[in-house]
Length: 225
Image (cartoon, rainbow, N blue to C red):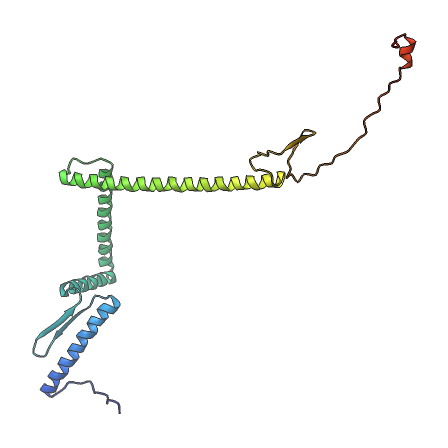
């Protein structure tokens, strides 16, 4: 059988009331701890017993939880009041202006300006920051140059490969560098033994030379004796 439902009301018996308080207090604190761990929440629990005894739990610190609660409550109340809301945003704007002024001052100091009010320690810290920044810039510059060189090498290799393929398409499988030791020169064309260019050769009979003495030569008396 299941456990019967308990009526939520004040327990009249003081002993039973104290026992129930101890059990449920421990259970409540355990649940608060689990909630803080599992959900990464900032939890604060404050318990006063009927005898005015204090029990508390906070995963950070009770003061931090209370301060955060008061600030959140104050901000919530201010946003509900138009006048308070204006003051709230005025404070926020003033804080942002102060942060902007600090950033401008740091930038001027990084540029070597407004250094008169700095001591030796502040100047040393500023120098260390500049050296770290300079190292970072140089490392980035070197990396960019390396990447560009690698990209140029890659493009050069692609162009070279395209030239090789184009040479093969035009000249066949001859030596890519053009060094064909077995090439022959025929009619002004260099033909290699492995060239795929068709060559057409024709055999002609030598022209018959006439040994007859031209008639005009005989008439002029130039016939050889």
